[in-house]
Amino acid sequence: MIVWVIAGLLGLATGLRIGWALVNKQSLVSTAMILALGSLGLVAALNWQPLTLLIDTALRWPNISMGLTQIALIGCAAGSAVMITTVSSGRKPATIRKIAMVQYGVAAVIAAVSLVAFFSAGQQPEMSPDEYLRQNLNAGGNSLPWLLPLLYVLLALSVVSWAGMRHSNRSRRGRALFVFTVGIVLIVAAAGFFFVRVVGDTGPVGVRAAATLLGCAMLVVAAGSLLPSIEDWFGARRELRVIQPLLTELGRRHPDIGIGVRPRGPLAFRVAERMSLISDALFLEATAADRKRKLRVDATGAGSDVDDAGEEVETPDVPPSEQARAIARWIYTGRQDATLVEKADFPGPGWLRQPESHSDREWILEIAEQYRALVRAENGSGSAAGNTQPQPASL
Image (cartoon, helix red, strand yellow):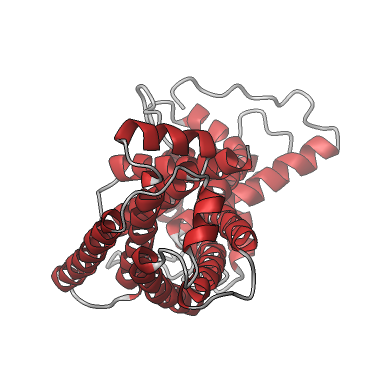
């Protein structure tokens, strides 16, 4: 049961990677991650005794599943190595691709040699994976077929562990890389225990303990691979709640924005699409408000904060939260059913432009959070009991 939980998590992580590769442009990193996770999931599945017996019987070679396990371990090491070297490399794409092909070529040669050594050792009586490892991973057993693949796994995943720790950080992807790297370190430790038994009579731990460590490593690797998707889903749900009040109000004012059937896809894509609708509507609102302000300026003869050359007004020298609050209050007090007596004037086009510390996405979120805070404050005071606004169908 535990084996299938591990295999299922790794299969889920592989499926998400395949789906991401289908939606986006295929890359060396996505291909390498699919290979690494899929191979590790295959290692877990091949060590489930009923499936092991089925494969051995179907292929008519006792313990052939253990030979396939060696190939899967090599594939996991190769995919992980290509992934981490591609991410951390600053070379040209053509050079990176050539390096990846060389890495895959070396792994293919090692896999072929390991498979030849496995078949050259001859057939043994059918046995469980634990029993097979216990009898063969020692100096007196048939340990030669395991020497080369374990050595390659140790070297390749040691490089992955070093590079992964070096590039881990506090960002969302950096945290996932850290968890993934911790799992790789555990795989290196388990492979090291197996390697010690291959070259010596005994090891620091038994075969069962090393296999248990390998299972824990697979769980950690699966968790690290799924972590970005989990965080993206929860983050996207939160962002949808934040932007919904502002989106509803701007959608009422500009029902033609984003008209048509909304394409379905990953939740993060739907959030980005709704943010683009908010950005377009804010631009239309600001353009109309600025035109009215200029007409009033021309009628009264007062000075304007936009010169005759039409140069843009600089972003105001205030904290981003205060700047976003001014934009949010301007939208909020401009509602048809606004209960506030005093309506806020348009602060100017310079106030709508995001500060240097914010990206477009972060700026839309900041304005939406300030708008949501105004909605909550009015609802909390009991003055907005009848201000429920239906969401437009086009949004």
